[in-house]
Length: 120
Image (cartoon, rainbow, N blue to C red):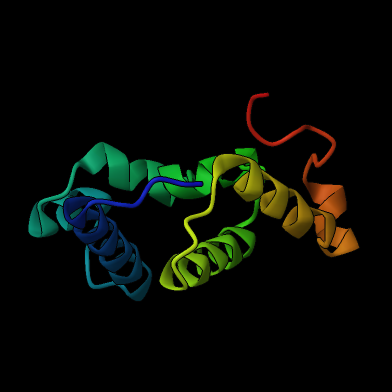
């Protein structure tokens, strides 16, 4: 499961998106100008302009479950906890495997699903 973003990281990402949008619309003369006005690192903005993805998006391909699958697993865990049944690790692993096996065939081809979840 991906790590939750900190508040600062979320704010920084919003500023970078604002800078990218401003550059496309012509609000800023250059990457240097946008980085100065919004107080974000010029190198980070330049990398994004050149096509580099954010760290979260770049590492999403390395995850065993998609974001939607993780959300479903969290929803299931929450339901169990509310009913007073705290799920144990083997049950969680089993549920994650079940969710992964029900994956849409097209997504299945894109992700490597033959690798086991977790460490035995």
